[in-house]
Image 1 (cartoon, one colour):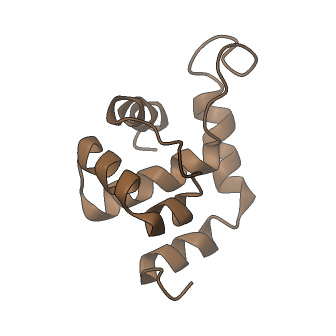
Image 2 (cartoon, one colour; image 1 turned 180 degrees about the horizontal axis):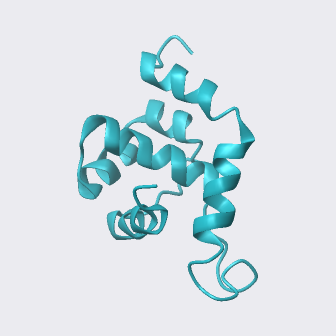
Length: 103
């Protein structure tokens, strides 16, 4: 945990509240496509998506830079809770950002 940056520790504390992640899961992702929760390929968990978009906004990165940094940096992967071989591409991250919106 000593390798975490200060903002990562704060975000971990904030996201310990399940209501924040549940809001992203139910309001935004469940309504994106009809039957998206029951059909198709398994996606990333809502908590992972929220955690993935936080460094983008804190660092003011593009989705391409976010993809590169998450693929290369193990600390970001630990914070975001992504397994080693699995990472979304920039286009998918952009869709998630659009789905969550500014609210």
